[in-house]
Image 1 (cartoon, one colour):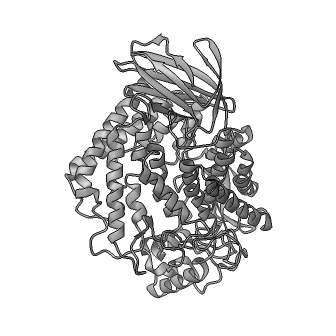
Image 2 (cartoon, helix red, strand yellow):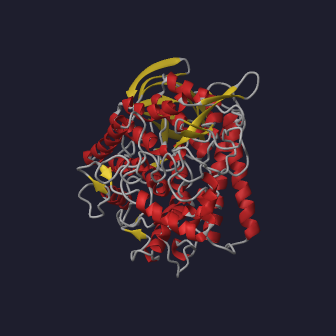
Image 3 (cartoon, one colour):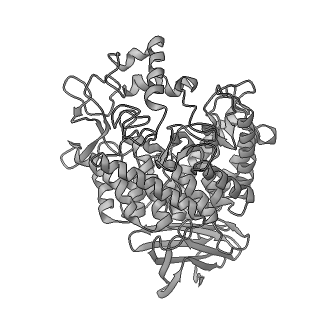
Length: 628
């Protein structure tokens, strides 16, 4: 480890450093109150009720505290991890006791019984964050391997066909892929009023004239029959999210079985895409034939005609990130990049003013017909019908999806950065604005303000985003005080809707990382910090960190010790040690590093700013702590 020592004294901490530490402290207190008010004895959540029978909702429980281990891993109080473990064990117990219509419980083998990887991806963010927080916990490691094992070819769950290289159902999990009876799942998620009347039918060959016909209960029953016929078996791109589960097991163990699975499955989807003229098909039968379940290469579950690019783009992006992490080969990014380019090639340019134009990319593909659904923000024909062109429709800006940002953050390629610029929504989003209101669960949007900061457009961003997070925490605290304890009405979202922990600004400032793809991506970061005195992940008490430059050459990092004690910090290149510090410049001195970790002494009231050249993705990634 290269050893450095801060030599610059400070009279007062920078504002960003003060807000960063205040945010961590206030969130720790808020989590204490949250657990007291909203969790029962033994850590068990208050939902589902004892007599509940249902097939979904477990992911929503875990979303209520999924980021607590991540905040601990960045330097949060021990209480974040203690509470997270307690509530997670309580949630598992609740899930084991809750019956489904299929004769097995909601949680099987500690894993959700049978759900799609949109929801499994959301739930397993907790799993991955716990890997960052507690990699030496034997229970954490055992579960990571057990969960990954559900998708190996020899698993009794039978989720994966190793010969065909496909996941055998759009819904899968602890109980396997055989329980995708859509009528058994929550109609709020799959019923006509929620999805089809708002977003349009995915198929044009049904007897219904328009999506709103499905509001008739008899017609809705017909919808579920069609869903079971066309969407209950075979593979879909969303299943590529399972690569994170296997990558997580690799980070714990280094077992090549998990890396080989990720590469094998990703390559299968690349081959299917090539066979389909360069556009990823959204459904593949158990035989391996493209379009077997839905009748065409489009029209599958969460596919091009269902929710479009918002859902289709998740799997290729997440899987390519994981493959780069595991191999160091950024060629894997050609896969999601090619899909984004297909949309850009078919885009329509809209003039927002005399200077700026926004690309409206198509988000869906389907047969021509009368779609008649809410088209707010979507280009329409003169008669108000949604614009349809050569199969592509629902033309709108790309700004709510982070896939282009993630592509650049992994590749560090200027062409990918230019893609982000080309996709800028000039009619909607101000890139130099932080919204202080409580963010939605996806947290979309602040990636663009962060990029503006990195390009020098928004110098106040670190302070503003941390202040915005602090304001959100205080807002949640006020809501908890006003509610005064257990909510009058409980549903599966009650924890998520009240979670007082906000991590995104901390990720960007301390680690140089965007928010992971919410539906199951891993943290992809420039650096990570450890406290060698307490032998734990995260910044030491009183220490703040700011990554102020991220580019192809490397990073700039400032560490500030505003406390009254001398501190030691280990700075690791990459979230998993996958990067390497080539050279480090600080205080006018340039030193050759050749290591993936720096040991930095920070006397009380000191600051150290460094510029580091990084060699990215050159080391085998691992959750191992630097001293292990």
